[in-house]
Image (cartoon, rainbow, N blue to C red; front, side):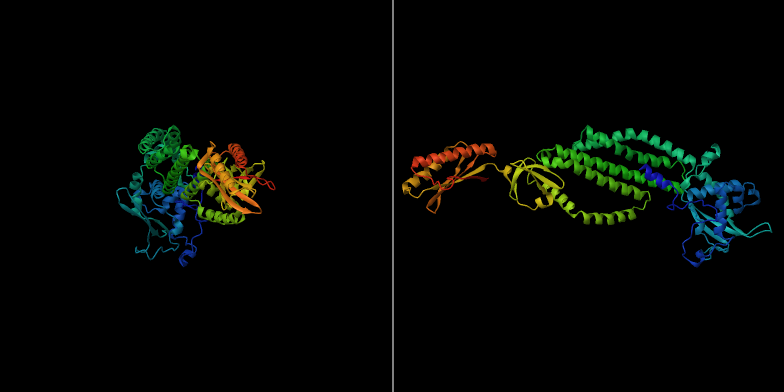
Length: 529
């Protein structure tokens, strides 16, 4: 912020300087008419006022007094009147000699008498408007020259206008060194006064910020929003800046800045308002992110917690960039051209990083939808294993043989994902191959006995037990047996599966049927209930 303000303070063409250098090197005027394109006449309003401001810039007020229409009684006061008029114009009226007529006769279309031009109007605090006019003065001898001078009426108002500025006491009691002019029409004593004002505003803002944060805390507690000592400390910074702005504005009204300097100070104050606002938003983002992570919703989503640090950094960076652009724009920097350049560069980067962007959005989709969590067992595209990490680009799955499978998130978001950890029980299923020599009664007794014994197992859900003769072929009778085992842990299911298979073998012996031996007599698979 300070660097931006100092950069705006450097001499640029953003503000028209009230007092201009010598006429020999004026800024190039805009070619709006034939009159503007011609070189100014030596005795034109433009040339005459250029010499007046060149003399006042160099402190040659005696020479500047030649451009005042003075009565005989005011001749000795001429240098002082020139100085006061110069200060009044610098404070209240932006005069650019290059905008004045370059013709010796002055303007002809302003409705004023010939030989009279108006260069502006000064509005006093009471609303009274004082016109500032120049009149043509012809040469009175060979040693004199024709020129345009401030009218007697304007000169007669110089003393009253100067008193209205409230600067006479400072001018009368401070040495000339304090009135050394800096860029943007700042005087040296203006800079010192602003520095003291900034220090005083900072000290006064401390209790004001404490009161402001206290009021905000009460409102937050009434609305049942998250508010603790950590949030209170984080709000002190933007609150201090916000409280400093009105103090600085009120104090700057008493310093008596010239118009260009006052305009720059007001820009700086508006920039401080933006700084406080975006700083406050950054604190809100950080506080909100922390509250979400500490909530029950955040605790039940480990993948979200892993992504939280990155998302908070991105959010704060976006707010910081927007704030910097807004502040730079308020201080007069050409942010439009910068944004245009960044836009063109952004298109090139986006075209070169399509896959990266696709994977980034895929990770966002996974983290928002939460099809699985870190540690869950999943089956994806024939790969079964546990989720080890969910990154910005890819997800890593650790298989049962300890190999690591990496799947890009852009593809994973479009795949069929089977979450084995999400089931509440495990399905046991097997096919019992019975030789056809068994009788009808033996088959019925075998089916009934298997169903009865499976239902007796402590981990089997009784209503899910199904045992049926499922098919015949190739000299084999197939009996399918299935049930739900009340466990989601693979080790417990393996023990229960072994016990259930032994139950099936015992039922075959008891029923007097013989199981086929050409192929594995039994097979068991696990599926989601």
